[in-house]
Amino acid sequence: MVGSRAHRLHHHHSAGRHPVVARRGPGVPARAPADHALHEPVALCRALFGTADEGEILRLAMDHITAEGPYRAEAGYLKVDGDLVPRPRDGRMPALTVSRRVRELAGQDGDVTVPGRSWGRALGLRGLEGLHGYLVVTSRSRPTKAERSLLATLVGHTAAALSVAFAHRRRREDALELHRLRGERTVLQRQLISVVAELGFERAVHAFMACVADSGGGEDAVTCALHGLTGLPALVEDRFGRLRSWTGPSRPDPYPEPDPVRQDEMLHAVAREAGPVRIKDRLITLIRPHGDILGVLALVDARDEADEHTVLALEHAAASLAPELAHLRDLAEVEVRLHRELVDDLLAGTDEVSAFARSEAVGYDLHRSHYVVVVQWSNRTADDSFAQTVGRAASAVGMRSLLTRHSDHVVLVADARPHAHALYEALARETGTRSGTIGVSAPSDSLNDIPHHYQEAERALDVRRQSRERYGTSFFDELGLYRILGPGSGRRELETFVQEWLGRLIDYDSRHHTTMVETLSRYFDCGGNYDETAESLAIHRSTLRYRLQRIREISGNDLSNVDDRLNLQVATRVWKIMLGGPG
Image (cartoon, rainbow, N blue to C red; front, side, top):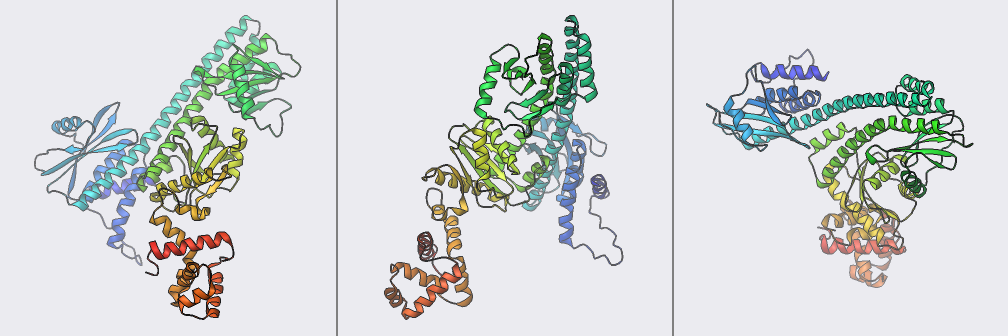
């Protein structure tokens, strides 16, 4: 369907360079000009993001140039292997002078001179990884500000679409790399056959290879073949001790929750030895290509039956599994990097069009309310390892989120309000300590507000760390008076605080032309003395009692409660002095 849209869009602009009004059938209302103006960029965006071909994206943009103003697309270039390669326009290649000028710009935007055109500009198509190409646009007259804005929007959409297309191409290249690694694994497996053949183990290893080949490779195939070869239960765990694959009898159900401290001790003990190491009833070897520990391959040998053949099979099985896990790790790192770059841009402030396009590329929905969550643990630095720990804990408690790490904390952008205790308890189990603090912002309904809500989450975390119970989870919208105290608070926080505590009374006064908020303010100014308050308001004592009772009913707050009374008193002072009272 996207392809057909792209075809219609191309036909739409190539025939006369003017929008074509669709023929209406009976009973179909004509599209209003505003609707048509909105439909055009939407249709273009769908076409741009609906194709994974960079050349087609550039062609669509060039065909659409005339719809953005008095423009003509003179040339288009794509960056291929570090060089700018021109793309034909209506079967013609761009002039050599234009190509020479574009290369002289060295990635920057700049003016371009074309005979017969009074205005010309080379516009870079840039993404997260740098320059993707250029659009060279000319005009017979200098474009207006509005026309330049439309052109800039088209360039931005084209650059974003190229970023997505380049990401798709990298995925295809990764798939080819996986195929190459599997080929290398096959070579290692054949070498395994020749080695064990010299030791009289040739027939058993042939069975090992046959089992792996029949299963299609991977962790399950390796444990299946290793179990068949040795007769012992075989298993693969990740480096954190979580089960990934088990073949053989006596699998624990449920599988024991790993202890982070003991797991690290075990990994260090095995890493110090040259080969497999026996720990209790397991014969363990590490999967660590290039020195990085990616997981653990083990045999459960409760009767101590393993011999040199078993050790040899285990070592070669680990070697055959290493390329597979290394490739999976590389893919995961690419995905994590894309997530972090998106979150970093959201926290710093970025345009919505680019953010939405990038979030769709990584499979995350940004079209919802979001919460910013800041996590800090006293005994853990905010490195990649701790970020992975936070990500696993968030997934374990059902949080859908994007994640990044800053100097001393990890930040998540979550699509739902976190549970008051679940994430903290999960991280306490993961880290083996409860000395951690989590701050959660108020909900954010706009991507432009995420930087402000990031500050809210940091405020909630700081308030919690300075309190008597410094460890646990704090929510910004539950801080009460502390929301407007401390550095960084401004008029926005004050207005939000007053609205939370006095909003119902202010609305009631506005609708009924009463003075409930003023009455409450005078009551606090007089120290809660009924006679002084009534006298200052020039009303009877019984009238004051009635008003205070109505204030309790309307606001839902209890004037005898110490916390409510304090927050209400501060709110009335802010309302009167800083926000101008009834005005």
